[in-house]
Amino acid sequence: MNIKMRNMLALTPLLISIGVLGTDQVIAEGAFAVGIAPGGAAKGYSTGYRVNARDTDTAKTDALVACKKSQPSASGVAEDSGARAAKAKCEVVATFRNKCVASALDPKEATPGVGWAIADTQQEANDEAVARCRSTAGPERRAFCKVLLQSCDGNTK
Image 1 (spheres, rainbow, N blue to C red):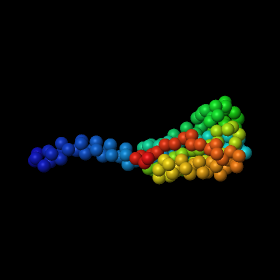
Image 2: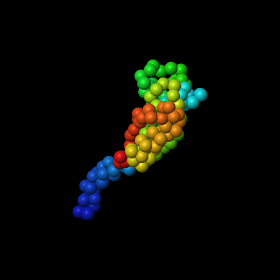
Image 3: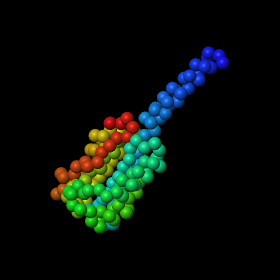
Image 4: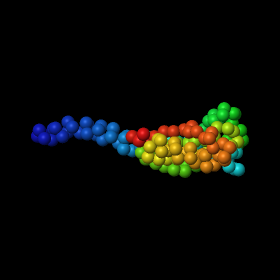
């Protein structure tokens, strides 16, 4: 075996490992799921997300599982039939890559203020989610909207 061939064979495992490690950074799939109870978000609202999944199908599946999972309410009130109805309605509403996600809501039970967003930066996602929450919260509750869920996919910040 000539020296050139031997050097290539010796480097192959290194090149493969670099490729695999690099793939994790390139393939960063995300998904966001939302469930809204019949009668609107004031009756029940649930969200779930996944970032940095290996593929879109995994991201979607994990986001749905998170949306349907029992979550404490923002105000600490026990789950009711509206929350269960919202979880039953969970569906993936967006997939993304190298983006940030945020969900905002009015923490008072039985209020309609909710919003979510996906954007290029965490600050943009947070701002848009809060703006959407304020637009549905009504004038008396707008100021109470706050981000409760946030995360970025890939190398995004």
